Amino acid sequence: MSGLHVDRARLPGVQEVRQDFAILEDGALAHCLQKQEIEQHYASNVQKSQLVQMDIRIARKLQDVENQERELGKSHQQKKMEESDSELARSIQEEIQRKAEECRQREEDDQEIAKQLQELEEEEASSLPSSHSTRDVNHSEHGDTDHLNWQMAELELQSQEQLQQDEELAWRLQEEEETHIRTRRNRERNDDYRTAQVAQDEEIARYMQDQELKYHQREVREWELRRESRSGSLSFSEQRQSRSKKTPVPLDSEVVPLARDPPPDCSDFPAQESGAHSTKQLFSRNIAEELDPTFKSNGTDAPVDVPAVSSQALAHTVPVEGLFEYNEEIAEAAFISPTKRQSGRQKTKDKKEACKQQ
Image 1 (cartoon, rainbow, N blue to C red):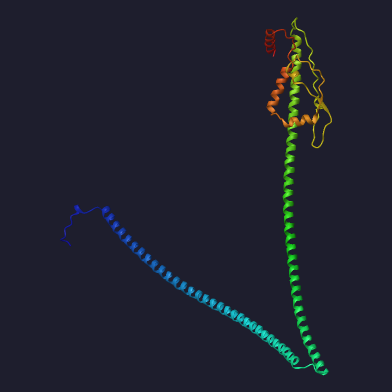
Image 2 (cartoon, rainbow, N blue to C red; image 1 turned 180 degrees about the vertical axis):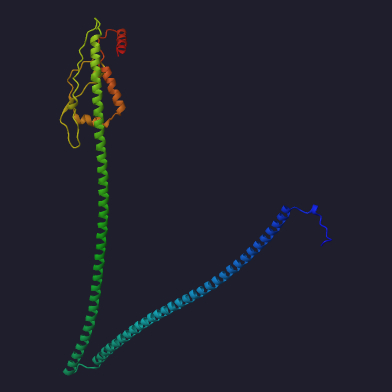
């Protein structure tokens, strides 16, 4: 050891040596962790495979149990079906045997009756009507045959009467059932018709009520508009009259009095209610008097019935805006200062002056 020479100049530093040792330790630790992870993964795989195999064995056992129970149920059901079939076959066989026995008994009875009848016929054929005793015997034998024939006829009549009674009873039951079904259908149809009629009446009543409300609202609205237009026309007429008093009148013109009825009061207008008719009457106003101020009305127009006027107003209703504008135009044209027209040129001048005054 003393002879070994170490070159200290070429030795690595402490930090480098520590770093190398740390790298080696990290590699060893990573290798150990990887090994542990592989072992855990392998153990988990083994455990999973064992669980799967156990589940498969349990599922097979349960399936075998279910198959056995199903087979037992099928066998039990098949046994029950076989027993019911055998019981049904036994009952059918007994019924067939009973019917065969009844047929055989009926045939024996018929043969016995036929034999008796044949014996009686042979005795009748062999006997001779030579003595009174033989006649008595023949009479008794004829009485026996008549009695048997009478019994057979009675049996046939009873069977026919029974058949007729059964047919009448069946026919009566069928007729009662048909009448019951018919009455039930008629009742259902009447109920449906009644409900439909009630619904239709409700719809008609609702529609009539809506129309009546609309009509009443329209009347109220029109009356308010008329009242406003009349109040406006009255105020405008007062202004025009005051203005016409201030303006001088030409000498060559003759003032023509304007024949106009006084404006009716708002309270005089008849208000129509639903189910009531007003008896008041209003005089119709001439449209020429409204348009031409120089037109003289005779005042001989016939009175107009209020319900007819209201019905015409409803038949030809005017929109609110148009009605308001129309009333304004009438009010403006109704109060132009009246003048006597001389010529065509003077007429145009008068029109221009009237427009300027407006």
